[in-house]
Image 1 (cartoon, one colour):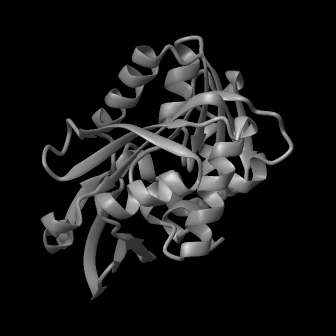
Image 2: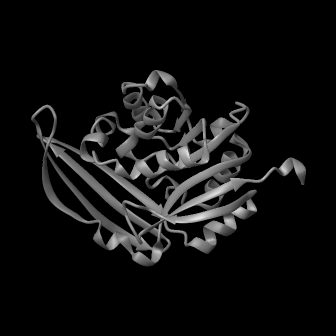
Length: 246
């Protein structure tokens, strides 16, 4: 698997993630779906700084948070209810042999799109299936390619006041579009320190995602609109088929 981007792996940037992206209303849909499906045991893959994991744990669910960025997990462990979460440093394949047997696995934000190679995506889907009980649910979002969201991603230098009263200047620039891959660079300047991160996301259309899910033992139950970005994202709700019955 590719190494996590600096935005998550650099300790100086990981501690700023929740400050610079403090609106996590996008997680409401996952909390609602967990309740709708009656999930009690959830795996949060690519959990980052743990915002969803600790929220679910605070509601009494058993949660496993998995992420390859040690710095992000260090931030997650400082949050309320973090002691109720099992944290695993690694990608989804790190779940192998742990007998997770979860009711539901989730990938929020851009997690599903960081797997730019077919092999990484395939390995992830296989690992998710193995972590779920037969009939368990896989819920994740991915951006609709036709919307071309990257055309609005550039951010001119913008000043943000940090909780400690320091000022940060943040920018974002899309540097390459070689569809289905889109690369962008982010920069945060605090005083004389310049923190940078480069990210590449892969855009898969709905038929491709549905095909990949089916080939990895999932049946797509529903494809919903993301409430926080109507018309711009698909939220896939897929069920793990019991391969032992094949």
